[in-house]
Length: 261
Image (cartoon, rainbow, N blue to C red):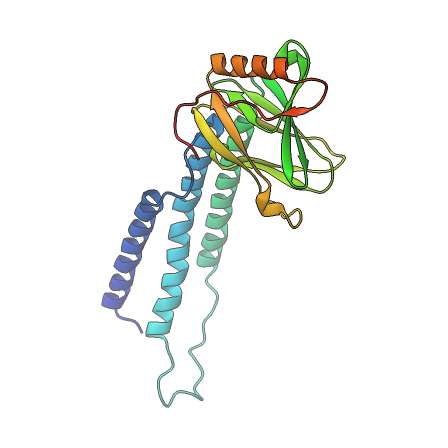
């Protein structure tokens, strides 16, 4: 039988490991800068999941290591049977009910974050996103430009205003992902998909396709420029005046402030 001292040592070691794991999870910078309102709640959800997962991992690892330490077979015991062990109903109910309640709580919180991230605001602007091997193009409709539609290889969005992206693919499945926004969505041929986000940090951030879409997949990158309302209107005006027909403009860049991703 294991001694009380060995059990106490194992419990103390497990508690220290849990504390260190939670502290390290906050010290490590897992993600790029937060550049949207959705990013804040998403990162909080991640930390909640980590805090819930670390004690479970440490508990399982501690039981395994403690069992190897205390109940390992000793020389000469190769042919011996272990002591008979009967079921413990109270323990079985506990280790079934507690994980079930924990999972339901985490699922409920995750759903609440998803619901908040996708909540439709009172006002939003709509921008089209077209994916094809191996480039992104962006469409600004007449309702936004006040005149002819604008097509661009550069994505400009105003800070503090909700943006609703309408996603379309010309060929294969892609994924529209802006790491700084913490939201991504598959772009499927023949199936329109959508991506709501509210940028809240000025700067320029990468746009990535993170679904293998062909030989040039690693080159399918673009930039999103989060600018002020005045800069956004000025950029739209410059594009509308320089764009003729449906050609995509390169998109002259107004100066942006803030961090880049």
